[in-house]
Length: 335
Image (cartoon, rainbow, N blue to C red; front, side, top):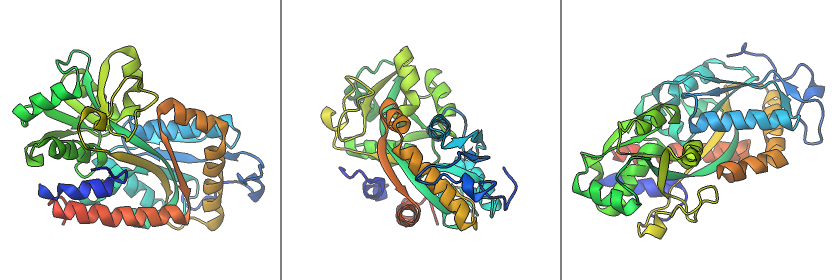
């Protein structure tokens, strides 16, 4: 599976709170227009899972860059975890017209709307921007007996149900789809995979460090600090090419496993916000994307720049939602 779009890869698995109505600025002159202007104030960015995960890291980096670059000051980032991100999604949908609020989200939330049978849907939100793509990683704790991806795969094939794999997303999300695809790529029936779901990287990491799971499958950026401190080892990344932030870590392809997998993250706002408030967010995120500070963070975290805003992101979301629904229905994870 070589597609960098997760849906094409996942298709192979068929075998198995502010005050609503407030504007984002006190005055129109406070907009984050491409040409400059006063920094935006009073923005709030909700993270729909626990602190320390990929959504949380992305949101906090975005808020810091906007502050450092004087694009938006005092942006509040807060966590509202639950149900694979759909608790946060429901809150976002309930905040109809609130132009100061936005939701950090990604592929995992798309899948969770189906597997969690969420009443709230992404179609109800206002798409703002897709920010990044990120390769996945296969990670083990420092005391793991598996030194290479080959070691792990050999043990996994010998006892698929006995080796628990953890991920920071609910079934249907990227951390679930990655080990399912990996299983299929190495000849394991995905139905035999013992997958344990955690609500974001903030919950996944303690389980990994505590050896409650044999290995983890998630975005590699969530483990960089622990890799540097020697607490965990990355056995392989799922990108087409090696990741600069992880020296000497092979790709799955470079290890003889024909699989490439890429996750993505973006930001949406509540329904029915004003056109002016939508533009404030899009302008702020566009200026953030164009800043030297953001480019430095992309390099630091090993993220791939995948910026697209407004209606183009809306089209992407619609396509992803349909494809996710089709795949999960075939997998028996959605009605």
